[in-house]
Length: 288
Image (cartoon, rainbow, N blue to C red; front, side, top):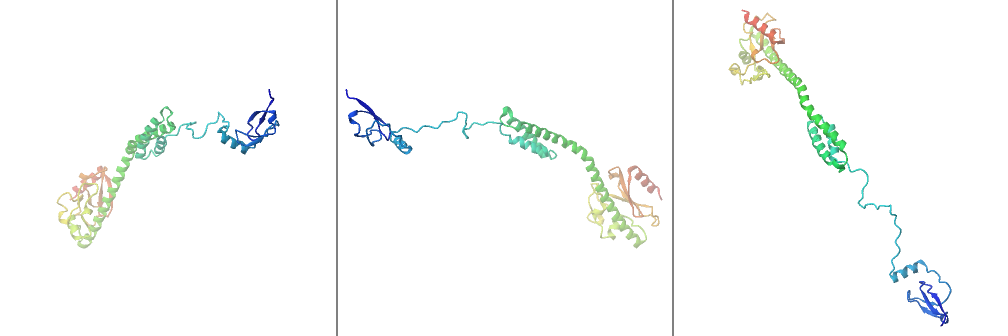
């Protein structure tokens, strides 16, 4: 039996068994299709570019790089950490901080309830924010009637003071017209309709107390027809030399705030309590 030796292709390294008599002869590699001379010398490793070409020709896939089992690619869909904070919880807290505004308190309560429902079973974060906003919103709604109860008396008092000042201004304007009439005729006018007739600067609003339901008269002839005069004039037969004499006062039947304004001949308009005003009015009625 002939002796055989193993030769290898120097290009791709494929091995062949040949007889010793064929050493030194030319062969064509069936793997890479490159010619080579049969030799028993160890083959030289092919360069990387040739190795890649051989793998392309033979269809062998390139080796996969090692992958660390502990690494998780980004964007794989797996999440970690706390859940995202609920937007309703944040909105509830912001509106709750503004609880002094009625609408903000109501919104804080609504957003807070929605936020609490969203944070159940850790579906979203911010449960504490939602609870805080809900509490502040409820507190704001409870403070609204309390604030009204506190501010209403002050508002009523301010409204009363404004109407009282306006009525005093009307009486001062009437007094100036009375003084002009007295300087002209050396006596006080017989009634307020005559005063208005002689003084075109007056108007229907001058004889109406804003605290009453009276309406302005269109002319002096309508002044005493009813519902157009808020003042009682008592100076018709008064001595013009008596500076302390009472000339006019607000109608006691329409008084508000526990008192009325009284005009004296010296031009002063003073607010008196109902009890004191009644005494003054009775003394005027008793005077001949």
